[in-house]
Length: 466
Image 1: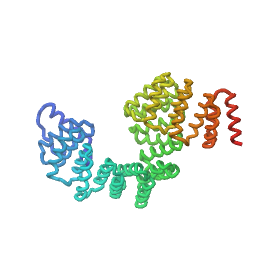
Image 2: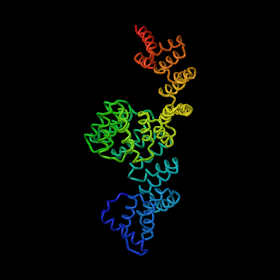
Image 3: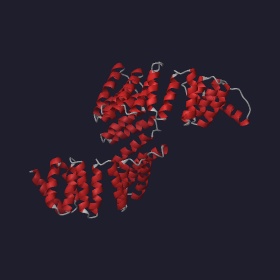
Image 4: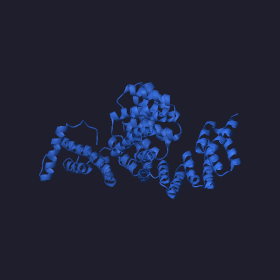
């Protein structure tokens, strides 16, 4: 619906009651155009689209020439998924006010939902010559180009939208994402610097600059930029949320917890923030607290896959493998393309003794992401545990082929070769591992329980060090 001054709450309540009494008694009652607007707004805010649509149809029967009602009705049809009738209403409206920005945005929304991105782009390119409120138009046009995979064109449109409205959060966010996908994150910094130079108090530009630094792993710069954003406006959820994300990336979990809690003081309705808070506690090994926060996220969104996975990971830490498997399976059902979910399932299945299921899960992890050190270590270990050294070596060697500079894989291959009594080959692999990362040799020592093997390896490693 179009932006208007908020109706008085009490007046609106009285209007809605009078309207509903009229419907219930099947009587007639006069409502002026503003009254109907208030009634429709009430149902829209309550997300009762059916009642909003009924009120809108009744209003239009009394005020058939109201452009606002016509737009409201078209919006309702789009939100209800009735695109065919919505297009008919839009076509009718175009006869009266073809260059009305709300109508243009509505038609663009329909084309986008129909995935008619070529038509969307052509339509908006033409409309930009006829409207003054170009910031909204450029943003939606950028989305059209983005959906077509035309990132450079999308970036240009987002930048044009931001020039006209430097506070456009959606354009700033999508500009950042487009630069990230195009591999030009560094370039986006220049855009934010221009915005800041024009207005040093543009806290949204400071925030996006900080988010960009975070993605570039320039964490100190990220903290500085985000803290400046918060100094300008301390009442912003995203500022504390992104600052918490920076500290998470730095493995400073006490600080990330502090920032995520500040964010939740401002808005408790964002499940992602609860999940990040839970993940911070999980990284600290505080599984009980982590599960509490993951469950808070699930109260807000029962289908939040990361929250289900988080609970499963904590239950895995508690060695409650059957319960963990339930949550991993739930996460996979919601998002079967996430390799971490399958990895968690594989670990739980293995601990439960379900070897076939564990191996099938690792196969799925391999399909989704073969560049994962833990995949090769855990997958191969199942065969090693069963005494199948050849298959364990075959898998770990495949991992080495995929990731030849990962010393951890070479140390594990050394361990398997020693287990298979192939000492000469083991020593050759060990030398390569020591060359890549000498400090990681402790993992090889920890792999073997018997003191004699540890002592023998320690002597070899000490000799190499000399």
